[in-house]
Structures are given as C-alpha cells and as structure tokens.
Image (cartoon, rainbow, N blue to C red; front, side, top):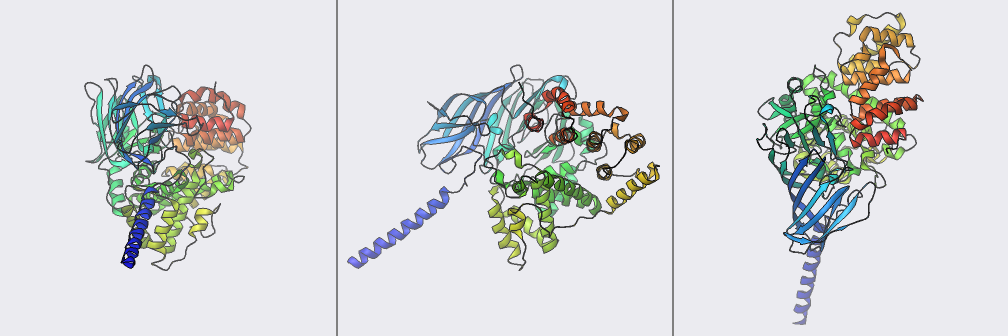
Length: 618
C-alpha cells in the first residue's frame, strides 16, 4: 500500500512538474526587450477600441483607448506613453487610479493601471500634447493643394506611444477598431478597412481584423480623394496629385500578383497607397492595407516605383512575420529588400533588378565606412539597449541583410531558397520572430536537410561584410562608367548616348564622378543635362550632393538646394545633403538653411538633423 502511495505521489509530482514547465514556457511567450516598459508575460493587450477626435485648431487628438486583455494573474498592467496627457483610467468600466513612471528621454513613461485576475478590459482617457512626436500637423500652405490642413502619423519605431497609450513593442500584436471624428471637409484613413469617399458628418469607422504590431497603427487626415488601380489596389492623394499618383502606380496589381507567385497569397485583402505631403520622413511606410508614401517617388515615368514594391513586400516580411525586437530589425528590412528586388526582376527584368541592387550595395559600402569607429553597428543582429531603435534603421539592416540572403540564395540555389521562404512566411504568419528563431528555422528547414554549410553566424553576429558575398554585376552600369569616362576625356558630350537611361543609370553616373572632377566639367555636364533643375528627386539629390562636395555654384544650384531642403522632408534625402554640407566644412550655410526648413520636418527627420548639425531647438 505504501509502495502504491509513493508511486502515486511520484506520478502526481511528475505531472505537476510538466504542468509547471508548460506554464513556464507559456509565461515566457514574450522575450525581454529594452524599448518598452510593458510586461506582456504578466498582462498583455489583445484588442484596441479607439475613439478619438482630431482637433486641428488646438492641434491635439483627444479621446479614449479601450483594451481587451489577456491576464496572467497580474495585479497591474503596464503600458508605454510619451508626451501624453493621461486624464483618467478604468478597469472593467470602473474608475481606477493610475501611476506614471519617471520620464525617460527615449522610452517616455510607463503607465501602470491596477487590475485583478478577472479584469477583461481597461480604458484610458487621454489627449496628445504639443510635444507628441508621432504626429505632424500641417497647415494648408504645407500641402499640395494649399486649401486645407493635413495630419499624418508615423509610429515606427517607438512613436505610437506618443499618440496612443499602448504596449509599444513589435512582438505584441493586436487587432483594432477605431472611431475617428474629423472636420467634415476632410477624410480620415487608417491602416485598416478604409472609406473610398468622404462621410457627410466627418465620422469614420475603421476595422483591422488581422493582428498587427503597434508601430503599424497609422492615421492620415486631409482633403484627399481615392482612385482604384485594380479590384484590390488603389491610391489616395490630394486632388492635384491623384491622377499623377494613379498613373505612376499603375503596375500595383502586377506587383501584387508577382509577389503572390513568389511567396504565397496576399493576406491583407486590400493594398492601397496614400501619397502624403512632402514632409513625410520616409520614402514609404508599410502600414497594412495602406502604405504611406512620399510624393518624391512620383517621377512621371515609374522609375522610382521599386519603393512601392518594397512596401508591398513588407506585407510578408515585416507585417506578416515581424521582428520580435528592434535588435532584430534586419529580419524586416533585409528580407524586404530581397523580396522587392525579386518583384522588380519579375516585372522589369534582371538587369533593372541588378541596377537597384548595386545602388544598394554602394549605399552599404558608404554606411560601413561611416561606422568605422563603431563597427558593432555593422552587425545584422544589433544591441540597441542603450540607443534609440531608430539608430539601427540604416543600410546595414536593409542592404547587408539583402546581401546575406542573396549570397544564401546563390549557395543553395533559387528553387530551394524560394521554397524555404514561402514556407517561412506561411509557418510564421501573424507572429514575431527573433534572429535566433530565424537561424533555428533556417538550419532545420534549409541547410541541414540539404547538407549545406553556410557561415550564417558570421554574417549575422560579426561586423563588416564576409568574404563570401554575392558579386552583383550590371552591364548597364559598365556602359555608364565608360560613357562618363568618355565625356571627361573628350571634353565633349553626346547626349544621344543617354536618351534611354533609367533613374538608376543616372544615379550611378553622377555618383561616379571622380574626386578630381573640375568645376568646368561639372558646368558642362549641368549645361548638357540640366541636373540642377532635375524633376526626378533621386537624381536631384545625388547631383546636389556632388555640387556641395565640390563647391559647384553654377546654374543657381545653391538656391535649388535650399528650396529642395525646405520642400522635402524625406530623411534619407535631407540627411544626405546636410551631411555633405558638414563634410565640406560648410556647416554655417547648412544651419542657415536648416533654420528655414526645420519647421517643415517631421520629428523623425528633425531629430536626425539636430544631432548631425549639433542644432538645439529653442
């Protein structure tokens, strides 16, 4: 009898141990990460009901955020806030006190709300403030049509907490509904199911049924219109831009089809693009269902639409399978550049794709050189614990990540690579992945089954670029270099040789000016091709960079550079030119321009240039 009792006790003990282990695994669903105050393993948000009013007169958003919770017997839930005015909080519709933690310059403040193990819902009543970093309020003169004001948000990386109190970590995925009230002459759109026409009363209802990370919650409000491109693609823009946008993005449906043929079904129902005012800080932002895009991508000849392919690719790498922390950011962007270039190859051929890849390879070389005193920043897996995650959003994540995947493809073969990526996206759909999780999946599903050896850890965890890297070749770029050399040697220019060049060829041409190029050569090239007045924003940017670097002042280029920097807020363009001023010891000139241009910039751009030029705003 005692034996049986002892055996029974051991069985119960073993069972309890297994259950405890199971609970331990469950409670560790979320990894530790340094850029959020949230404690999701204790209590986590699962769904948001947002009810807000957009007040253009006071330039604030006010309203409430109600969350459905998943609670692991916690006594409180912790959210992230920054520069928000928290008015009151409720738990299951009953008022409760809240506590704000100390302010951190990068993270903001924790918001602690008491709950019980039975709490299913919390509500936070709040309003934004003048310091809110995610929002950019534009007056009518800062828009294309110059008739009504405009508002847009930018949440990546950790700015959503500045317009919604939230658990602002990419590994936390939520669904959301929203009621947004705006002036009746304006339209509101979000990263959700969107209206195609203005409402009569300025009230809009939104639903995002797929779970997304908080940085992908996005809102834009303005005097905008919609035009379809296909049954599941279309564009929003101000009225003076809508026809241009539709014509520029006419290949959107072809892009979606090409992407689906590569890596499986598009899981977001609708793929629309909104062209924002020029102060938008990025080329594009992959907000699900509604990509936010800069107007600088509209060149009139579809030559810059690889950006749209890039944001579409994020529908798989980034939105569907998301980096768990910002240290793993390369999983979003390296995969997306690889996917983007595969889409461009499918639509426009391998030569065009290779040109785009080589431009990125040049950017990567420049980025690595820029980090020569900080080599750890050239690793794919970063340690950003003491930094703003925005510091990791550079060519390393994008172009070294791409080069890693391209080299991997050339090692294993394209057929195996495509099968692996299609499986990776399907298996990990609507979840988040760490770098280590990706490595495990790569080994288990590609390398080990095919008995392939690859230096994955060196690529990911070591600084710099490994020796076994893909060598990207472009015959078109070879011709560009020969044409440039001929122009410089013969001192004569035959413009017919360049009449069919793409944007990428022109960019490569200008970037390859020798250090010894003379002012006379620059003047002749400008006279032949009118670079100073280029309407293509990428060509203009690289030309202005060369003009600053070589102190070329012809053809009113200084005035055009100033006007460009005041008009355009795209951080890549702006930081490139201000960095050129700094490197040319022309900081005083740069600061004079920056005093004029800074009010037009989103905080993402302004913060970067403040640091670059040592500018302190008053």
